[in-house]
Image 1 (cartoon, rainbow, N blue to C red):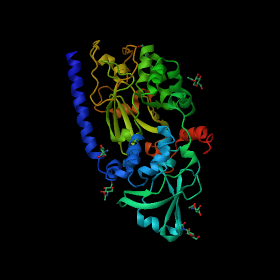
Image 2: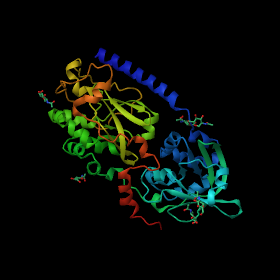
Image 3: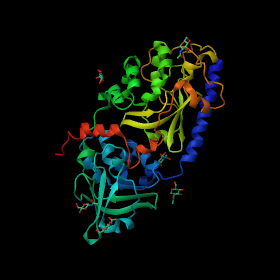
Image 4: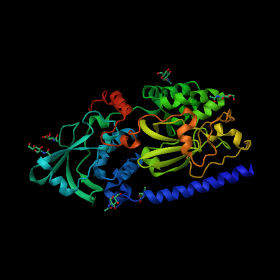
Length: 430
Ligand SMILES: *[C@@H]1O[C@H](CO)[C@@H](O)[C@H](O)[C@H]1NC(C)=O
Ligand SMILES: *[C@@H]1O[C@H](CO)[C@@H](O)[C@H](O)[C@H]1NC(C)=O
Ligand SMILES: *[C@@H]1O[C@H](CO)[C@@H](O)[C@H](O)[C@H]1NC(C)=O
Ligand SMILES: *[C@@H]1O[C@H](CO)[C@@H](O)[C@H](O)[C@H]1NC(C)=O
Ligand SMILES: *[C@@H]1O[C@H](CO)[C@@H](O)[C@H](O)[C@H]1NC(C)=O
Ligand SMILES: *[C@@H]1O[C@H](CO)[C@@H](O)[C@H](O)[C@H]1NC(C)=O
């Protein structure tokens, strides 16, 4: 026990150090929260950028224009009592993925331009509804309208901050109406997680989840925040022989290891690397993993065995987000048992300090290791070799489809458009 806690104290300290170092290297660019904090009349707009986590997305972009409205213009929107996800869609229509300072706005070639927005980039918008039409009007005015509404709904008021060509924050006269952005989004608790996964490349994982008590743990955690990392079918198929070899409890722990009991958008993962607890974390059984950036990609390192990469986003409906990953995560608690000291049944939790809250409902005891793979690369100096060979747990052939694509203007998030098909088409603005 003594040994276990001193080890975890050490790793917690290491993790904290790691986070400090990473924070220092990623805090170079702009901070929209800080920029808008200088303008009290935009406090409501600023508040909702933070609440919807759009602020993280904006800060992660190198070239961006934010169309801000003052508190009076926000109050109309607030009176509609929209869900946080609908609010996020509406606000994301006010974030242009290009730089438009006051000068550029007044000198648009041919007097009109279509700007892609963050709403379009997330894949939630269908067709051209995620674009904003900018038009030079008579008398030097500049008009803005969503492509969706087909009108000029707001005009340029003034420039708040310009840092060419990184970030421009300008005031417009009112929010841009868009039937699609304002459409109600389904309640995350009502989302059929396994059906969703099955439809989008994670059927094997979904089937395993449906057959396990882990499904209940997932369901119990959705309301309080849940980020799921589901391995694509190619990866899970290769892992099936090992999976089938696990005890019932072992299977449950492995499945619960693929989710974190807190909402973490891709931008949040990018800017808060470090050790994270999972749904499988249970007292002495740590079952944690490390989130790290690799260029534009976000990776998840599970022990030394496997480093998986986030390759897509199936759904992002706060408090639920489901990512796809290219490998099955392999917790050392299940696959290196023979090499570890016998786990003491320590009752006290020793989670790393910066990890999210522990899973809400954890009843089953974590399973002992069932086998130690013959090809276990436990002794390799880093995970590199293991990554190539781990358990037939092969990477899938979509190297170009990095996590970044999800946010790119040609973003390819299949599921999000399905969701908009489901919800947006039902909605008609009154
Ligand atoms: C614009 O962003 C780049 C990349 O983040 C940074 O190196 C540069 O200093 C920024 N420019 C200004 C004026 O802040
Ligand atoms: C941005 O600024 C706000 C307010 O100053 C601060 O609370 C927040 O931590 C900053 N975010 C980042 C990523 O530095
Ligand atoms: C501007 O209009 C001219 C003539 O209609 C057209 O050839 C050109 O492609 C337009 N430029 C842009 C940037 O739309
Ligand atoms: C923007 O809207 C105006 C007015 O509806 C229209 O004349 C113009 O062609 C539109 N611009 C683009 C680039 O679609
Ligand atoms: C989710 O969908 C699957 C298959 O589409 C179905 O078998 C299952 O009963 C659904 N679960 C819930 C909770 O509705
Ligand atoms: C399953 O477990 C048995 C007994 O521990 C072992 O011999 C076998 O190699 C394991 N199979 C796989 C695929 O791990």
